[in-house]
Image 1: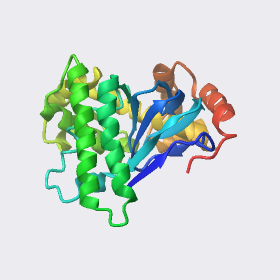
Image 2: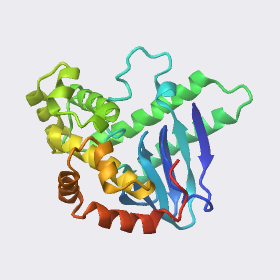
Image 3: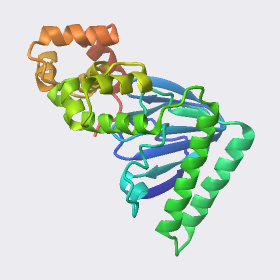
Amino acid sequence: MVKISHLKNSNVDDIHKHTFYEILWTEEGLSKQTIDYKEYEILPDSLFFISPNQVHQFEEWKPLKGGTILFTEDFFLLNHNNKDKLFELSFLDNFYANPCIQFSKNDFLEIKQTINLIIKEQKRTDKSQTITQALLHILLAQVQRCVDIETEKSFSKKYLILFKQFKNLLEKHFIENKTTSFFAEKLCITAHHLNLITKEVTGKTASEVIRARSILEAKRLLTFSDKTVSEIAFQLNYTDSSYFAKVFRAETHQSPITFKIEMSEKYRTKQELS
């Protein structure tokens, strides 16, 4: 699935959880986007990337010119034997990097030309899935080239793929509160090797990445559900709710109750998370 739409200044402040990739391009105007409780300012000549399983909201915007491209993993990988092809793109699924990339005028012009070709193809009555997919691959390769030029530190492709495989496994098992050794075994590497990889890519240990994912889910449940702190702790496999509160405070510098009150006031009057 791939879908193109142009930005509109109405009805864009709903809170929604993504099941797909979204590329938001901005030619003119300013906006503020929130992804998983982090706020980003979006400037002209930029692309903003949102990954599956992230919670996204438009916070503020001024008159915008731009649009969005939505696509699924299945569409990107269709007819490709190498399933790691998506993982090789460093700017996707990297929750520790800034999801907003601003380009030079010339680079953005080249990227926008490819976007225009995708739009043109989608408008054809005989539009081709093969051509659209090829153009999407070209667009993302153009972005990766710009990222590689600007990035001082680059990761080995092998490390990047292993890290994203770890992240995929974590999405499936984070609620079980598994250890680093569990994920290392699934990846057929040692716990020490997994820690080296996560340190290289994120600056954090594997345990810290695992804990952060658990606390992110706790934040979502505290914000969008009526469950008590004890119920959330139990759901996330913390046998002791006081220990859960201690871990939560260490990660967020707030107690779960304080966080729940603050976020409920901010979000619960908006569209409920679906």
